Image (cartoon, rainbow, N blue to C red; front, side):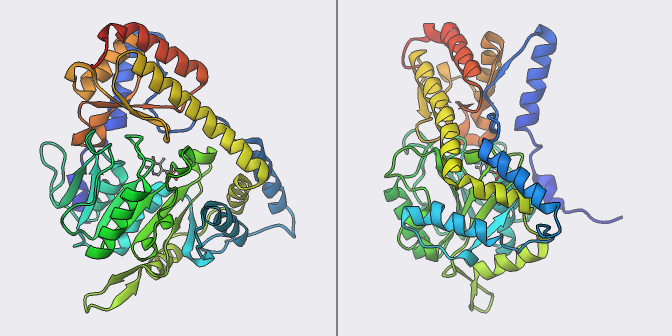
Length: 415
Ligand SMILES: *Cc1c(COP(=O)(O)O)cnc(C)c1O
């Protein structure tokens, strides 16, 4: 029989969301009725009309002899690359060439696949708590040892994101090869300032690290002075890879389109010490393992950048951010200590009375029928915290916050 990749055996069972599902099902079976889910990291608003029109028009085009397209260009159609360059980069004073952008079917895939083009002995750093994809894909690739009792894998450098550092860790004192950054952050809702990102870029250049910058939530940034792209930082072209997605900004979680940007200046080393272009390696990988995003989907992504597209998607983001404001203020009024939610669609709250994340999950479910996400599911430093998502209808958000207010107001302050 074929030997399997035994690194997979090190993975902790896909614990978080299946366990949430199990507990919610058990609760509903025992008690009946409905629950309000503020635990999901998926959007809830329908696609903007301009995007639906673009999908339909492109589908019609594909049904004509002149408009039919087969395999597309590996990196994406020029119409989409040009729109990305103008609106996501040019508007922020950043110059990125079309052949530095790789259109894909998702940032989950890109952030999971990027480690493939680096050596198996590369040392990896992540924040704790963290989006699980960065860690698990490095485990699968054999870049770690076993996990300890807290769930930390041997060989990975974990950087605690804490109240003390505003849930945005500083660069470590030791050198690593790859550091994953996510800003605005899932799960903590924190955002990295230009100054902090500048320190990360300076550190990466000094130690020769590559920063993998996940900007899936950049559209939720409200303060104009906060960086949306790592390439707004001088020197980032020599040390950073950036990932952006249409999933959260434009409701593409089920449509699927994203992109990864790798500047030509970014280099790694070969065993003989010679320098190798990271962009060229990713290009080779992309062309070998991926056959381009469907034409209709790329037309839909292009529509996000049209004047109506920008207006309609900005309205959706504003809708979610108003939800976030209501959650943040409602939880604060109920006596909870809350973080995030002002430049990100996630509110990160301290559990009351030092409760564990899962104990609070159970208490919230039984007393209010509201479902959130235990912070410990994103890493050991998330223990004692809880994530509430702003992705839901206004009605559900208001109802959930009203219930939490009634159940917990007796907590008073400082819980
Ligand atoms: C949702 C999310 C993404 C986007 O993934 P897609 O595959 O593009 O849908 C990327 N990174 C983080 C941290 C996310 O939460």
